[in-house]
Image 1 (cartoon, rainbow, N blue to C red):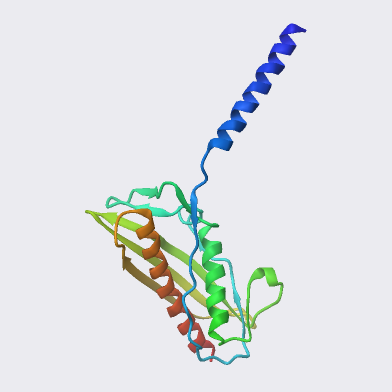
Image 2: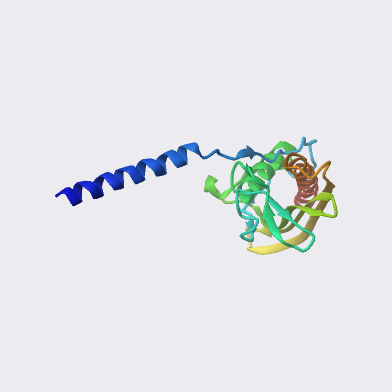
Length: 198
């Protein structure tokens, strides 16, 4: 009986220590992607556009903010994170930008459960800060397919790339550069899709 009591006391103490460790752990500072200001784009305004969830490799499909060294070594900024998995943030801000452009009757996601006339399939190939020889540069590389949902055919494809020099090697400078590169890619995607759907 004494052995059982001792084991129970040990288990309780272990659980309390684990909880205190969790409580003492500091959460990372979270950052968001920012949709760029959009001018009204030319479009048919009769097209419903569906934005599929972007796909990405595991190193990108995360809340952590990717940094690559000169030798291609993968690391992440310590103590900071995106507010959600990067592909989800990318999709949300792209949907926001396309809707703000006014070029479409509606901009949809799979959560809307409404079919679109056209859809965008997005592959995020690069979304990181590349640090080498004392310099840091944000790189965003995205491959996009425009699909006609009415006949299930690919209309056209295009690759969008942007690079932005970071003001420093610290996480804040890297994240600001990533946002700038992301906004350039989003503006280019919105302009391209608007023209193709007009």
